[in-house]
Image (cartoon, rainbow, N blue to C red; front, side, top):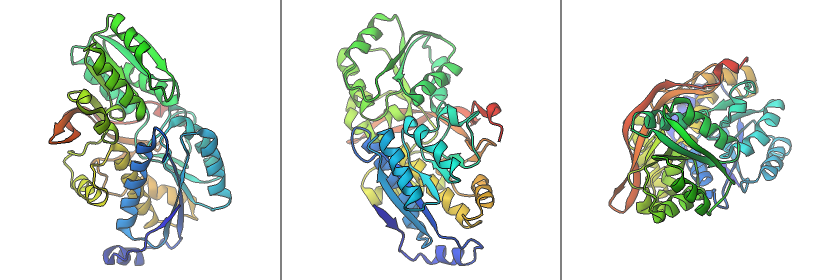
Length: 379
């Protein structure tokens, strides 16, 4: 599915006319548009395209493909986009196992990859690359925020759980990095699992006084509803992915009151964020999620680099990306030497406003947090 911005926004057109950058840029977006993780990819796509269409840059073309949450499909699509569609930039992957299957091969072929979500530790340290930029975070970050919160919230014995794939392992590493209590049990579930009766029984018997989960998409919906029905009653905490706008409506009252670590929230008080949330609701009839916010920021980062350097000059184009000269919906935003963001991390609470479930910021967990694997990156 190909999208090309065709609207002629006078201000944007004048700005581009004065720019030294003349190269057209073709972007290949590989994301999850079907199956249990579809809401994440749909929000990624919609946030990205909202910024693209607002810019109305005739030199930017976006080709969008559905990876079906399958690594082998993602690899096939990347090969097609690079070899047949001749894209200059790739983006959009939600899941870290798919990113590990695609990103190293893409950067080895000289392509620039802008991550809207997945940012595994393997690509943050020794595996860093000048052509790979994580616009979202490093995988550990939002879990670090949850761990830092739990350390000050009276949770002294934690049961922690995540799916058995790269982001799941990063999530529990991140939580433990700043959690000062005792981890009584560390459990890895199957990716895509929907029945958590066994794990809930383990929680009940564990002696924990709190539970940390990283279960994005349909996994989170299934667990939270089953956990609420179980009556275990221990406080839940997690990252934004487990309690995100894209899945909260399906969780319903079972999620209300849960706290989660995040680097963005719809109520974050920045001018760029207010514009984004209003524009997203007007365009799509729903509140945006973190995935939409990352997609929107990624597109605006790309547009800012296009205005400064031609994509055919890879070194200059990547230097322009590194400047991060755009108004992030997160406010303060810059890239560390490893091409991972430095940003503030927050604690949000799930609330119900009328008929809508959403998140509100209740505190700041960390300021200017970067990539915990920075020292291992030798670019």
